[in-house]
Length: 437
Image (cartoon, rainbow, N blue to C red; front, top):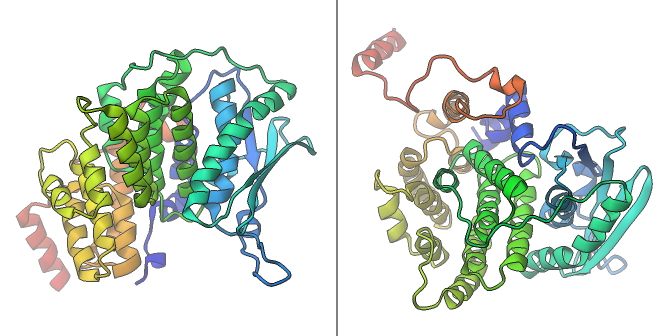
């Protein structure tokens, strides 16, 4: 059985209207005041927009299919709407319900052209109200970072004006002190490698920013949270992994603009580069952070793991991942498994995966990666894993989560159990006997 046949993160959500409602609510970055309008953002259907044109002598710059280039400018528009105007957004790329007939509907077109440029066009009520072009050379790695830097620098002020002219009122600028830290609970959530917990972390950080203002630590938390979501949703059927990667890139730019001399900017950029799949940039960011930190500065606890992964030094990752009491166990396990995927050995990856699943039992990305390369594995355990993990997340991760929509909150409850609890030996023996009969 191949990975396509196995229920994966989004595949199971599509089959469950409950999970579609939950994830649509979680992806928006928190709830806004009821009086605030909700902006709807749509584009050309994915299947039409993400078709690579053929490169010929007469067409040297064909249209690229890489979703990340489309998502950087699209998410830039939504970042301005959320952070500068305090508005809630609905994004078609995340399968959120979008009302194209609403007066608050905006169409975003952002084609990327091979070795040429990335363009952005914003339309409202049938009229184009903003256009921007960033010279880049996609699909090179540098072009992703260049696009995030340029779109943030060039588009932020014009987009603010565009929304103001469309009738939206910009919120008061309330910046918190740069030293305002993240709550300990949110920091723990960011190190818990399952996607509902990551949604909870970024929603809470958005709430803190909305109510109290920005700080370097809060923006760094958004960078890390969206980078985690990009990693953990990598095998979904839509563009959400790229959308979350784009958000991580743009919040990294926002952090650099807010606190250019803060080591927080460099550390979070290093983390982001690793999680969204550009580890060579991690080394550059780590070097910059160490220079800003100085000889007496203390890096974050997780920095050593990110540095080890960027250099493919898996010994430290392994030792932390198998330590049941270590607070960084989840992150170490995820990075250890990612490193095993570069070994080109299915047996190494499968055996690493077995250990990693003990450390992060609700990380469906590991399940999907194993299914993609090794089929159902371990006596069909992978085949049964995703539905069980989703059920446990409904019962445990979401159980004490305030602010869920009614249709999602009503699903939480029922008989609870410890995640992946072992069946008593006697019960297993009785099951085995029934199967033999």
